[in-house]
Image (cartoon, rainbow, N blue to C red):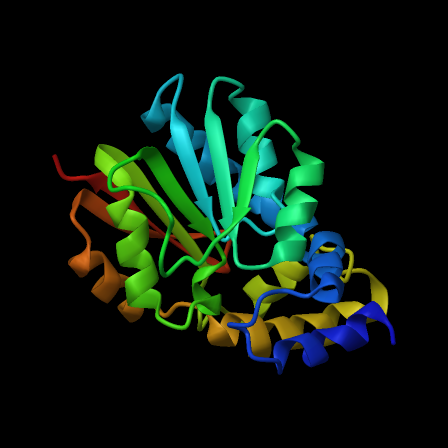
Length: 228
């Protein structure tokens, strides 16, 4: 089966199930190359607010691509990543041996309260069986005054915006562009975050000056600083 043919097959599976070796490989090759540059401006702005050194948690780290980028750009950071998929954690650890990655559930993070200066999650919320509980866990492990950043695909993004994103992936070349974009819109964005859900989530979080922004045409970003 071609890589494009896997998209609908991957999507119809229970998305709360940990990534297998096959789906981890496909994410690494097809999606991560577009996610990392999409997130780069968010990471850069976020890091200026964190300061020169910080302990940071990546919840739903996948293959560790964003964590690796953050650590490379900010060598003084201690970056920890967690993911429910054993295969993704293995990939992340191979990618960045000096960082710490472990298998863990976003709904029950194995850390004390307030231990991290910053916590972020990139395109992982749609995989959580209880998003509200996962978000509460992320907020719990941020120290007072620390930063929380949640990024998820926006449900309801336009097809033109989806085309723009898919063009940055290996699937966005030639005849695969339109079917891959349709699959992304139906099975990925279709399971993402609606702006009203993001606003409702923001209202439950103990954040000062929280804000929600649209980014890159396909993503919603919720971020703020935890109340002292």
